[in-house]
Amino acid sequence: MGEPSGKRVCVIGAGVAGLVCAKVLRDDGFDVAIFEKESALGGVWIASRTYPGLRSNNPLKTYAFSDHSYPNGADIFPTAEQIRDYLESYVEKFRLLPLLRLDTEVIEVTRTDSGFDVSTRGKVLSETQPFDFVAVCNGVFSKPFIPEIEGRSRYKGGVLHSSQAVNPEIFQGKRITVVGAGKSAFDCASFAAEHARSCTLVYRAAHWMVPRYYFELFRIDWMGQTRFSEAFHRYYRLSRAESILHGIGQPFLHAWWRFMHWLMLRWLVDLPPEFVPDTRLPRGLENLGTGSDFYDLYRGGKITAKRGRIRGFNEAGIVLDNGDIVEADIVIFATGWNQAISFLSPELRSVVQTGDRFRLYRHILPPEEKRLGFVGYASSIICPLTSEVGAHWLSQNFRGELALPTAKAMKEEILQIERWAEEVMPARAQGYFIGAYAAHYIDDLLRDMGLRTKRTSNFLTEYFAPLWAERYATLSEERRARRNGTPTRHWYLSAELAAAALVVIAALWILFRG
Image (cartoon, rainbow, N blue to C red; front, side, top):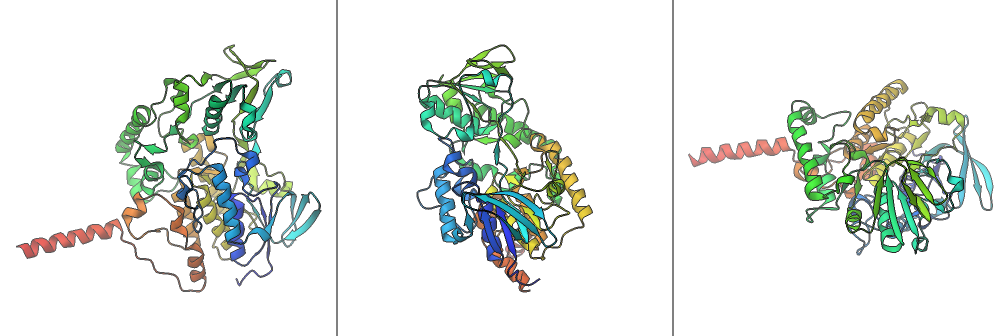
């Protein structure tokens, strides 16, 4: 297929996934328009959706695009404001602003004979335009979820989602109750503990939290975001070495996780007993969070915690299933998000979603609709990078340069991954979460595109160094070279080659020494 001159792509969303998808598509020759319903770019990181104290779970080199660095002076774990600045500088550097249409909501996408009709509603103009392709990049944090709880109409205080608790003044002098036990709940409770009259955390189950630095020395990306660490998690498809590790190596693997469980409890975080998760590692890692400041505040008496289910509201606050009443001026629900694709016509939704499950090949493509793609629906610990590689994969598909299995084969693989996800990540089985399996997922995409999976010069850095985004900075050039029939060469020292070299050196040393 030649250059896609004149082919139009609608990108829905101007967050992390939407911006990188638009850039990749534009650079591949498509005519791109980005529609964003908010008045600012950034998605979940925009100022109107970020609560005080929010910062990335990840160090900045693993929460970045491959071809754009944070400025000097940015925190190692960047704040929401620094991430907003980073995304704005990305737009400026790569001249994406002309593609962007803020305050413009996509209200309907319908299939046509040649592509799609996309209907939008803006402050000034509402219109319907034809597009050849559509890339859905509205993110997996698109619709705040607050559970329906009996008696809410009787409650005299305020009810907010954590993404709405953005004004520090709402905490001043108030009794704050935060519902949840994930990172956003801990962040909100920690901020409230320092600024509110009182703070109570209400939660049903505890989740694992890891420190940003292990033993105050080793940053989390060096310890938990490497190919080596990822090998200890069972992917749905295993390499030869992983088959051994997860096969006859099970006793070692079991001992490893018992050790990590003890290490987490006793040394890394020193969890209070009431915040020890009910599951043993590695179970429950799909809800893993980063940071342990909350526990210090809790031990210091600045936060009260109550574990139980909410039976309902009364006038003064919430009533738990054990009869306890938690009085509050404001209840903040840090209870996650629902994924919303209501703008897709019923016909399109039926090929994308069954119930609450997304049926997407490689978490990107509906098997029966190859002009419609989803970027950012492989939510992971390194979302910017998985989104960027996913954008390359989708663009190559839109260009007609991706060799895809049959629709039947794609559906069978989707079901295989669903069964695997239900077993290893039971809390995230909806079909848009890959968690700690980012390297494996990226490798799948690269193999599909015919690109190399080994991204450094030797096995030591490949497996034991963090999966920083900069490893993938040459993807565009590699794709272009492959398209032109001149694939780039890459020298790589494998473990097998290194071992063989050591054997030869040892043999020569013995020979000449003798």
